[in-house]
Image (cartoon, rainbow, N blue to C red; front, side, top):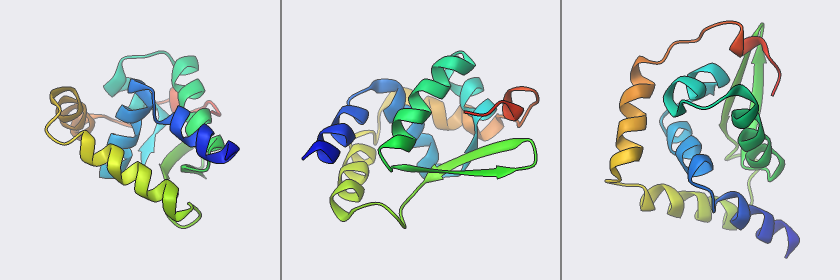
Length: 117
């Protein structure tokens, strides 16, 4: 029950839903998320750590870059269903669509990408 509660709390935040929406498109570096969301690195780290600690995300480090993706392989079935439902709920959402448009032109920049999250 505790794990389910943590996942539901993680999904109850607009910024975290926006992050997941972008990660449905592709793996993202922290600096790409910063560009799209227009938030500070500490705030992004906070949201990413919540999603990561609930088991929804995985982190891959490549040199100076930290890239996040949805961790489908290790996610419980019910958690995957919740994430998919959240994504479905974002369909045709204006802000979510704008985020994906911005993501298409986001670039991997340093030093934001070099900072661990």
